[in-house]
Image 1 (tube, helix red, strand yellow):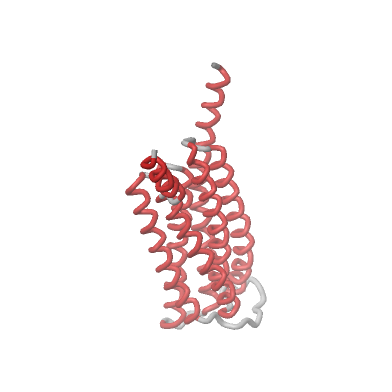
Image 2: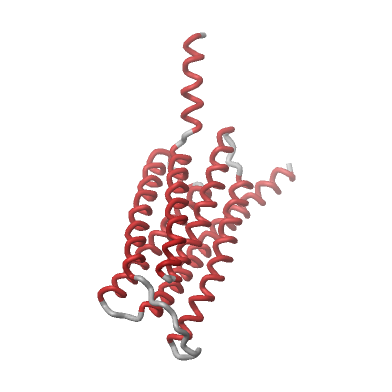
Length: 237
């Protein structure tokens, strides 16, 4: 009897902190931390691309909280497909909505650069600030990707749409951070117009976000259809 009581706490503890929850928790913390700091930096640097990255990372951090909730509910042995569908749909919806709003501002700047709108006096983008946060973003993304790699290696969790969506968010953010890094180098060392290259980078970041959301939507739709088939099969029996 004493042996059984000593084993139960360790089993409960291991269930509480699964590899999936650990990977999601680290990602949520890192994304929340850098988002809060980067919002102030985006205003200071006058960078639309950096602000769009903030919007995306803020939604990502919120998404990881939902992913953690789903993984915690899985402790009872079920897959909780409906919960996964809700989290994924909410994540993609928020991401597309805020991205579209941010892209509209970048598009107006592009029209000014193309001479289709009258030029407005704007302060240039601070390339050193964007460079620092791009490097920090790349480092954070690599740390998160390593956690997902370790988690998948232990449990094969990439097959879960919940974990796959979270991994997709991190991969997309890594691409955005790399684009911001290239933009910063062009501003600092190639003498390009900082406002124009920042607007073009913002649009590129927006398109990559929509591309990832489009791919995630098909994954979500496939899971939703499979759930409908299971429901019909169960009702038929």
